[in-house]
Image 1 (cartoon, rainbow, N blue to C red):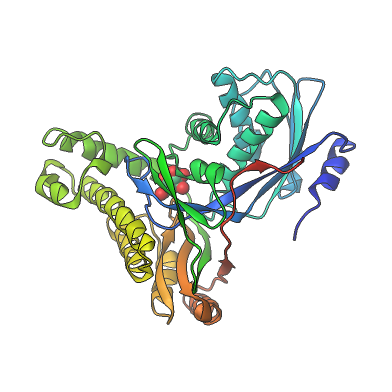
Image 2: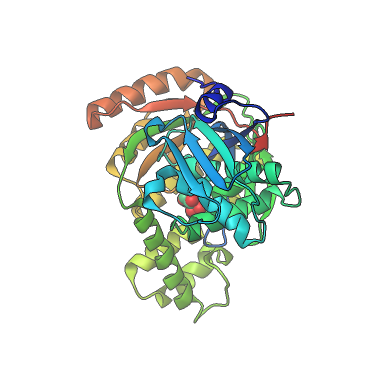
Length: 390
Ligand code: GLA
């Protein structure tokens, strides 16, 4: 289903005169999970699935949000002079947080505006529907209020700042960065310690990227996520007493092994081990991809899953079932959980001629074992957030 958002906008806000159109993608991370707040590398790409907006300025002070996905929430109205997170605003706390974060950066929004959105990223699936909405709002504000001095990376940082400080999830920079800077057929090899980035082609000659949605979302995701972050910083503080590093991403496997006993709790040691090894896996995976060695890339994806399951403990039985089923299929180069975890999606690289049987067999096996109909997306890699109107 694709909604005619200009029409929806006119129905909700009277007419669509002067309204402009925008798009912001979701993202999938191929490898490099839970490394972005440890100064490590990530390797995400933007999807062609995403969030659309139609927006225009108002002459009064009201900021009005409408989601065609959550029609029963109606129009959420907030005065631009009262920018605070309120439970009753629901989903609209995400775009509102961006207005607030713009103001924090001295970019004041000097009138109200109205914005209708619609998206086709499944919510809570680990494909960054919230980062998509955050960066989308940034693009809308820049366009409507003339802040063209902000780069796409600035918009990503504003999105992360808002999510951390307005919405209370202490996320890293990967999602907003990927959504902002995506490029067709390219993944982004991003070093989160200094935000240097290199695009690498993921246009595979004989394989496709397949996302499988487990359709489970475990509660307390944000608090479990914040716990992982804390465990990593505890490990870092203890390691810093014995080895000179700024972040866990500074360590290679050997130096970690030689110093890991400085970490007093076993849990924190496991978290740090994941962060260190996953970062090194990401570097190796990108190297392999550049050498057209997709088999090695796939093996590193599989190892990433094992580490996220056993050491970082962010998987869950349903997602493990999907990954086990995927690993057992012919033509599967690699498969792992993707995104923050505790449910959500897996990402698999599957040979072209095995995609149909993959979908059939994994779908059937998952239904049998977990009694849930998985959803599959054979995805295309697209461009980052942008203004669609001329
Ligand atoms: C979530 C966060 C990201 C990143 C991933 C895990 O998606 O928003 O910053 O930490 O989890 O890799």
